[in-house]
Image 1 (cartoon, rainbow, N blue to C red):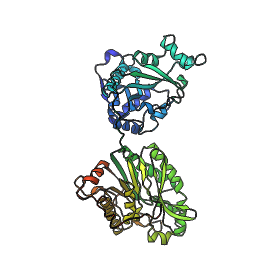
Image 2 (image 1 turned 45 degrees about the vertical axis):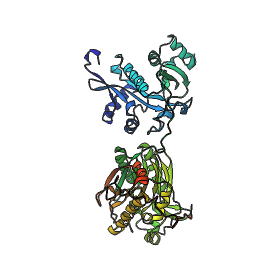
Image 3 (image 1 turned 135 degrees about the horizontal axis):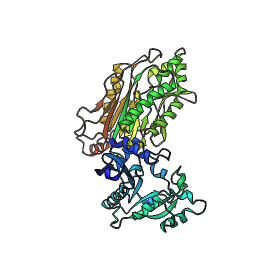
Image 4 (image 1 turned 60 degrees about the horizontal axis):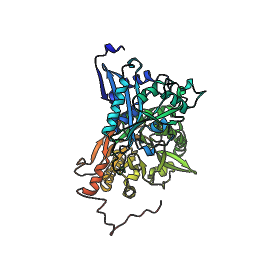
Length: 512
């Protein structure tokens, strides 16, 4: 595009509405590098955590360039960090609002807009932002795209010195140095696949001369205050096999992730349709065959939690451990870690028909959204379990369930609402709907997934934050505010946790 044809140039904050245009502009600018564009969840997270750091240059309504940045604590960055160390976590947990330097993670100008000094505008904006936020400097890893022409003769350090003395031309380093950035150190293996730079980079820095060192503030104990829950009200239907089932699982994960949910929860025994293949067997044998799929399902769900940047409560599945059949589920965190939970009380039907045994593991789980607990269906009807979890600091209780009749569902629902009131926490329940005529002992299902709250002035007066349409396949998305629970604990009209008469009664845990 010729300069004289441009009528309007504007610097504006990046929004998710710009994503597709940003993606195309990025591919045009970095076409030679693998995985050169940002995923939509990554851009969404950057905008959420640091909107002022994400800007684009618009030329006559088109994205001509972009600059993305975060704030980091300089002392927390390794001397020999890589680009992956800074950006590999899609939630950008390395971003620290109380940090002291602005870290540039991307800046580019589209090829057809180069030569218009638009890059300087992006750098000038970063400098102004750095000054306004009272950060001591701007840093980033700068590429050396012409180093491959000299790599067999000189070291990266010598290359930088020759560029500074104008003995070697390097378009990237020349531009940065002309914008008052100075080299700090050479970073080895910084950008994987950057053959032109030999995977070397230069840590460049611009010093904010107006910086005044502030007093350090204590970091908040909880990363997120408002947490978005995505509940899957799963339709029981026939599947051709594992691949068909997991395609449906990914569809729902993709759907709730598209609404930027922090959690996705599936119901109890959502994988039961796979038992149709074994319907010619006895019920105990059929469910043991189903248990053979559990490991593969968890591995695939763990991959989905990473790729879609969402914590997944897997509902529950049968699992064989040392010859015993348990009802278990897994928490697949978006950081890649996986933890297991068990159903403590199996129903009389589970014991009688399937030979399932009680679990013995109960704990809270630390997540990037605070402490959570999971109780499978029938367990929600025993108040002792949720009270033990509450004593460990649980903020959200997840209850995946499976009920065949409305009275069975009512037991789960009413008890879940009671758990929210007595433990001053949020309770989310998710179940299955429909029927499985070709699976013994799994004939019909009834469900209405919901999110319950305590009943006080800051919450809905009926304690219902959100609820799905009964007996309809759908997702339910709801936001819950953890800070409201803190206020309730101290200033609530009633304080169920604080007002317990421990001098009169006591709850003891026998097994750890």
